[in-house]
Image 1 (spheres, rainbow, N blue to C red):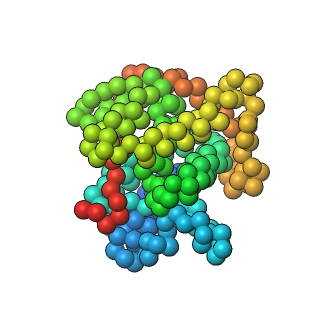
Image 2 (tube, rainbow, N blue to C red; image 1 turned 60 degrees about the vertical axis):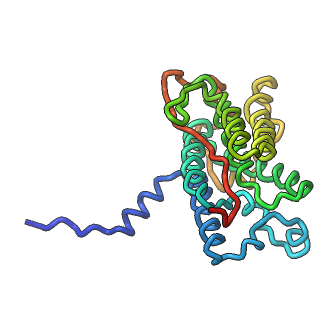
Image 3 (cartoon, one colour; image 1 turned 30 degrees about the vertical axis):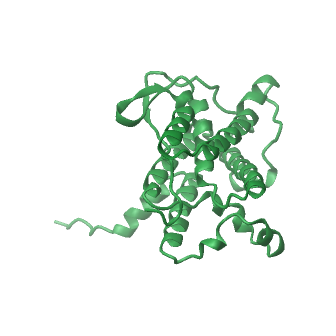
Length: 250
């Protein structure tokens, strides 16, 4: 009798990671790497926060992305959990077969937040980035029922406002959630509302160089998306963005 093969932890872990869609994979694991590295002082956090001067003069292009991929303290685990859950749902469902469109929408979110962040001197934009994804997710799901803390259920479209209220009550912070909601609405307008009212024409088509990164399956044409509220209302999903913590907080 041939003995079963010995377990290979690294191989199994790699297979598990490879099953995560590529954009969600990069978002989650980049956030984990940068956040843990900054918290443990393995990476100088000053090299990761939003700062226009070194971006422009020293071509530190990574600062376009890293301010959205930093979290710390007790909020890191919850942030990763909900980032994974909502990004996975968006990439697999609403942007199913349209990875280039999803990537482009994420870049738009980051770009808009960076503009506001430079103007208002906001070095870390992680919570606003998370709220923008939440707003997009919530409006795509529409009437579908989601389950919040302690089993509280309501329509997905109300999720950003519930989280905004929770943030205000728990931390007094409303600026970052409101910023995320505003940017999320711009992206939702570009991806869903404008095409619906303009014969599926795009106001900002996905650039060709991004489309070359993610070849589209046969039969899929450009940025589209599910009509909000089309999901079955009987399904239940758990979602919640925490209020977040500053790096180094406990």
